[in-house]
Image 1 (spheres, rainbow, N blue to C red):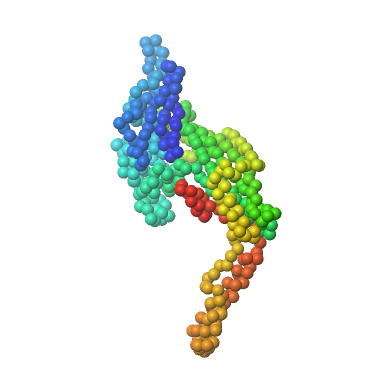
Image 2: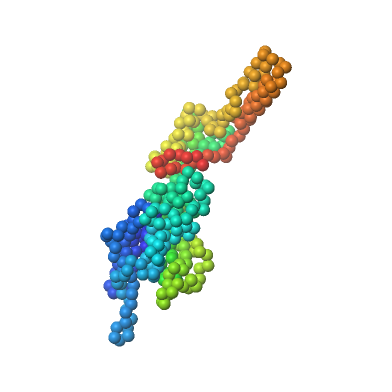
Length: 365
């Protein structure tokens, strides 16, 4: 049996081979409300493999209509790819660390990492935004859906004014199916990582010059994970049928391929171009541009010296005024020396990394 999943990991379509016709047959189609409750008024057909023996004692395997949940494990994986538990009418999903009720959109257990998300209820699911976040194991929400995009800036050579920007986007797709013979769930995943690197230098006319390259890497892997909820021929839970020891399964890299383009047209990637030209615009204004230079002020420049003069004029023997002026003067001097060192130091190799949120805004990491 094979499954199609969406960007949230929800199993939307289950299909298999019809042994009678030899054709692909849709066995179940799932549609969900945002928090996981399934639509039940359409596309509710549930087919499964069954067998019968004719008068000649020949066994036939056929597809037949079955109850929604028959305990065979084939269809119990649904929302976010998690196991749906309908025993005793619980109707909850098992996420590992916690159990989730899609009818309420809430967890039935307190969040083990509640102290890390104090602004939210410890029972909320996916920060109340299930269209963008998922919770892989019931511990903490993670962003998904949109490709993961990051950008970074590196000052390659401070003395020669060589700058570099990097734009990276990672997308993934996966398909899962159940191998009943081995009692495992097999997930095939393809991850595509595209990186655009732009080197920015100061040209002869004092203007920024750009040189861009692109690399695209596609990696395919397969993960096989045991599924103790599947049953053996006697309809009894079989925990020993699989030889996979780890509950997270075993992952193997099938292949990895990288293609490069050393003369990449930066204008074909507007987001990478905008980030690079932002640096270039600063270079056009100031050929010595260095984002790591600049004064850092704890107190306004000259405050310590000013207080020293005030102390001498007002009351040179006042211990409180004397101590305050001495302390501020020390801070003022330390601030001056620190800024001189900062602005004359070699910052080659320093980087700033950002992630890009769903709205395209840069968030410094």
